[in-house]
Structures are given as structure tokens and as C-alpha cells.
Length: 204
Image 1 (cartoon, one colour):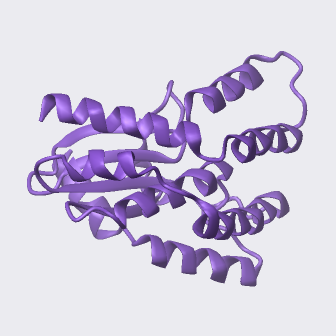
Image 2: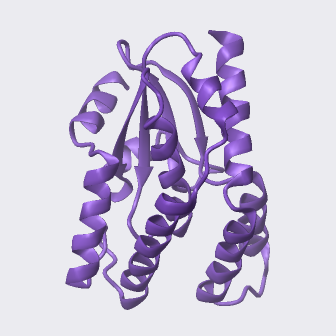
């Protein structure tokens, strides 16, 4: 596992680089991963707009910053993502906003389909769901905890969609899911991350 994590971090990128990559992809009419369909390219364009909006408007709770900053030790947040992923567009900017305020934490992003062996170590209900946050102890690369792929209420929507014997087209469902994120305004994501920080403090 340590060798896999080392290789993943070596291939990782900063959030700024990831954002620039998405800008380049949108300009070129492309996306990440092997599926270069019109719908995936469209999702990428929408996601860049979402990330830009969150970068300007997202407000991180001070208690959340304080909770992670108070943790002993140094950490790396290894995040598995893809440009076409709507959940990632709503969540990864929040990760970045938090880490920017933490002197004891850095973040590295990797693409799911470029590192399938890493993804398969961190499945969600047996699925390659993203974004996936893997919190590592910086010096040892020990996996301290994980989070993802999405807040519990959003996951419930996804589970219900997958269980529906006659589901609507995914394009329709994705609108429903994005409406949930827009209404929630990152509140649930931040609350779950605050719980994560509390759990880490309990074992530190």
C-alpha cells in the first residue's frame, strides 16, 4: 500500500493545477478519462462553472478550520477525482478552501481512471465513487481515515436512483443531485468534515 500511495502522490497535482487542467480541457472540448462523449464534456464545462462559483462564494466555518488545525502531526489529503464528476465539482473546492487555511496539511489530487489500483483500495459500497478523500499521516503515509464520495443525503439520492427498477435518464437525475448541492450550500459537507476532525482528535 505504501508504494502505491507514494506513486499516487508522485503523480498528484495541486488544486490550482487541477483547475488549470479543467480550463484547458473545456477550451479544447475534452474531459479527463477515456470517455470523451459529448455528455461528459458538457459535465466538465458545467463543473468548471460550479468550481469557479464555489471559489468565490463558499464560506468555510471557522470551527472547521480550527478543528483540523488543532490536530497534532502533519497530514496529506489525497483526493481521487475526475473533471466530469459533478460531486467532485461541489466538494473538492471545499477541500481546497479548508487546506489553504491549515499549516499542518497539504492536498494532492489524482485522477481516478489513471490510478484504478488506488481507487480499488478505497471503494464506496463496492463502487469507484468519487471524490474520495484519503487522509494520510505525512511522514509514514499511514491511512488515518477516509471520507466520501459524497455527503450522506446525496448518497441516499444516489442509492435510491440505483435501486429504482425504472430510473429516469442519468442526465435528469444529475440535475436533481446538483439541485440538492445548490440548496445545501456545502453545509452538510462541512458538518461531516467537522465530525471527521472530531473523530481524528479522539484517536490522536
